[in-house]
Image 1 (cartoon, one colour):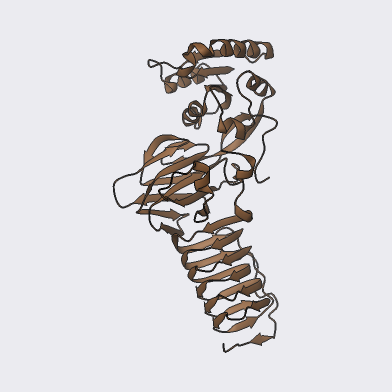
Image 2 (spheres, rainbow over the protein chains, first blue to last red):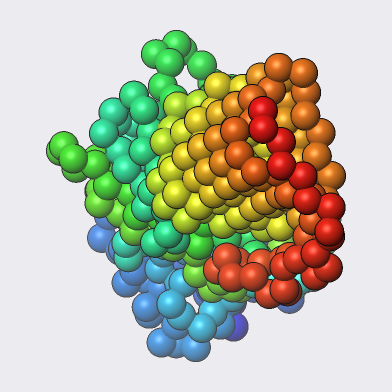
Length: 250
Length: 143
């Protein structure tokens, strides 16, 4: 049984027509199901809990990457399959999963190609793509309980599970990238191309700092503060992917 | 931002220790490792290890092929080839099947030519015996 969870921003008038088309397409393909919209009165956890209790085995996030990231944290420990219909602009995660946007994503759901992916876990919070830790001059990384990495000067740390640097999200390995902060206004990508970056392949990394706790953003959202233990959780989640998904490193 | 061209690590490198980090402890890898910063402890990999000019490694190191252009204080063991570039400064014993030493490189230690093979699991334990067939050619270079 399918359960569709619409993000709150889809209540805007401009989404009425696209959503009607999506619902029509889902019906045509025979993959329609119960749907709910997030509101300030209905939390995602409450809606997902209710759907699972009622027997939903496939939960579909309808929204943007933020919606999907929140959903991953809700369903990672449940025995359900996660689908995604991206709406509202370009979605980096949808591209990685080979899922086209809006109506065309319904065909991907219907084809039901399922893959198991690793997740990253930062303390108790799961993430699919990356965890970004606020730059600091006093960071220390303890990798795989074997060696430590001490960045010199003001540096940021990003731990990737999926999507960057040829990362294969099915190898049980995370990649910790330590990048110096130059103070220059540079794009996110160009920072990752800097010659002074360091890259470490790890199963786990503990990130700590001496001073005030630093915020860490899992898939772009604040979830945890230092000290943070980041671990790879192999094959933790089942997701519906597009047939054209490119598999890095394979 | 997640374009195809951006989804590659530089040159198939598994680990890159940049010039602005210090690493301390047991650093074991399976792929190619490039060192541009500072390392203390132990380094091992089944693949290539490249120590760039400016890097300072105070560790015993083992890899399939090793290229040194920086400074190493510790024993060096290459299962296949060891290359010391002109800017290399090595203080420690070195062992390899093939050794290439550039003019101007500094090597203070014993130099042993041996048929050396070994592989490691990820925990850094050797899974095949090293020095399968010890070669009688043993050279000591008082450089």
